[in-house]
Image 1 (cartoon, one colour):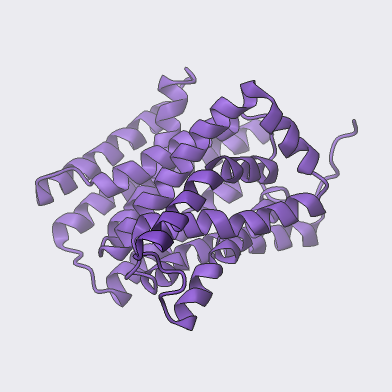
Image 2 (cartoon, one colour):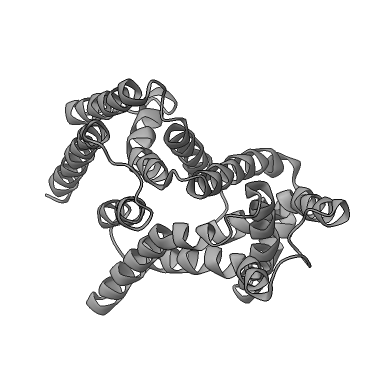
Length: 302
C-alpha cells in the first residue's frame, strides 16, 4: 500500500479551517442544549443516539464501510472494547448535557481543558510512556488548579473531573481500536441503540416523554440532534487528515474557551477570583504542555 500523498498548501489551509470550525461548533453546543433544558438529560441523550445513528449509517454506507461495521458486530473480540468505549462516550454526553442544563457551563469547559493533561497522565501510568520534565510540571500545575477550586467550593469539581476522565478514557480506547473513526462511532451507537430506544419508548408509554407532547419547535430541535452531532465530527475528520497533530492539539482549546465565554457572558455564571485562580493554574499547565509539544516536534523535524 502506498503512503498517503502529502497535503498541498490549499488542502492544509482548508483542513485547519475545518478543524477550527469543528471545535468552534462544539463550543457553541451549550446554546443548543439549553433550548431543551426542560427535558430530562437521559432522554436527550437517547434522542441524540437514535437520530445520530441515521446520519452515521448513511455516511458509513456512502463511504462503503458498512461491511466493516457488520464484521465487527459478528466478532466477539471487537464488541467488548467498543461497548466499553460506548459506555464512556455516552456517560460523557450525559454528564455534559446535565451540567449545561443545570447551570454549570463553566465547569464543563474546565473538564475539556483538563483532557490533554489527563491523556498525558494516562500515557504515563497506563501505557507506561516516559514523560518529559515539563509534562510532569504541567500535570502538577493542573492538579494545583483543581485543588484551588476544591478549596473554594469545599468539594471536587465533579462535573469537570467526570468529563475529563470519560473523554480521556474514550480516547485511550479509540487509540487502541483497529477501526477508523466513522465505523467505530457507528458501531458504538448501534450497541447502545436498544437501550436508547427503550428509554424513548418507556417515556412515551409512561406519559413523560417529549415525543408527541412538546411543541413543533422543540420536536425540530430533538430531531436535529443527529445533525448537530455529526457536522462537527465530519469537519474534524476532514481537518485531522490534513493538518499536523500539533496544530490539531492547539485548536482543541477553542471549544472549551468558547464554552467558558458562553458560561460567563451569556448565562452569567459566577467566575469569582478563586475560580479564576484555579483556571490560571490550568491554563499555565496547558501553555507549558503545548510549548513542550511544539519544541519536541521541532526537534524531531530537525
